[in-house]
Length: 93
Image 1: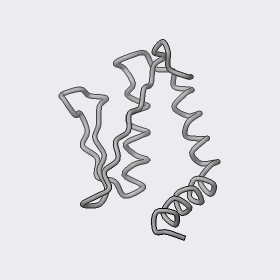
Image 2: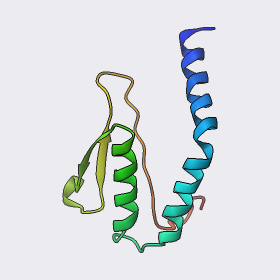
Image 3: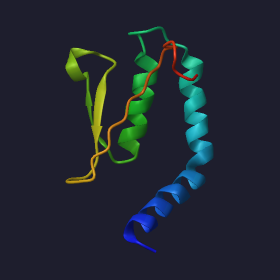
Image 4: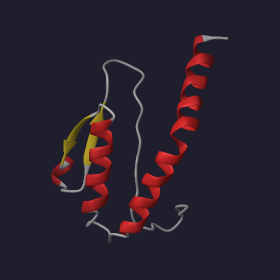
């Protein structure tokens, strides 16, 4: 198996192991039902989760109190992610 294949399998295995915890977290965020630009509980939950997983988290990115930027490790690969809290038309909820 190639290195990329092993890394992909590692990620898939991790997701399988963490499925219940991640699903519970998803429901926690969903139940907050915070209005746009007021996602204070949701942002705090994400920040706490990311820090517990070893990420360094910058809070208040771009002078927005609910925005944050999380980093882990050094070098590459670099991954980007986006989380949308409110029900934006066209996004699957």
